[in-house]
Each structure stands twice: as structure tokens, then as C-alpha cells.
Length: 125
Image (cartoon, rainbow, N blue to C red; front, side, top):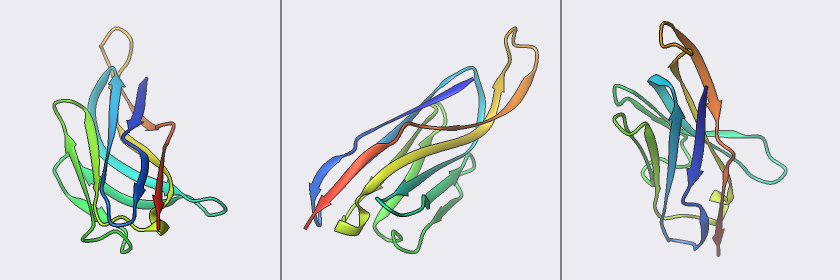
């Protein structure tokens, strides 16, 4: 179906920046929504930001004014620009995408919802 691969995580000092990427592959017809979520140790996975194919965005209050989500529809790739990082931003960041893909033969489409494997972001104080 559709596979997602995140990249761009790493270790950064507080106040620094990172840019995460999420590349979607497969027989994709459309990506309707792409989102970033994160999970810190001992905590539940939480929404960070989402973006629709039309460009509408939504952010968690904790990242507003610091993070920016974007999507290149032609490349089926999403991005999360993270600025002014804080130690509390430390987590595994996961990409999620929802849309439609072509079935084998290319005669019909089905819905998909996929998650990436996650990328670690560590912010030191």
C-alpha cells in the first residue's frame, strides 16, 4: 500500500532547530492529510501538527509559533520545521498520512492510513 519513512531527527541543544521529513511511497493517488505526532517516554502519543492537501494546518498549543508543518504534494513528502526547541520537545516523532491509493491493476482506489517508524528527537538543556 503506502509506506512512510521519516528522517531528520537527532540531538540538538535547547534553542536549536531541526527539520523532519516524511516521504510517502507506493501507489498513491492522493494524500488528504499528513500529520506529525510524538511520544515521550512514559507518555501517550500526542498530536503535534496536521496539514491537509489544501494547506489547512493545525498545531498543538505547545508548539504554536515554533513549529511549521508543510507538504509538497508533487513529491508526496511532508516536513516539520522545528525552531526554538525545548527539552520537553524530546520524543520519538511519528509521521501519519491518510489518503487513497491505487489497487493493483490501477482500476480502483482504496483508502489508506499509514504510520512511519518514527525518528528520535532529543533536545539537551
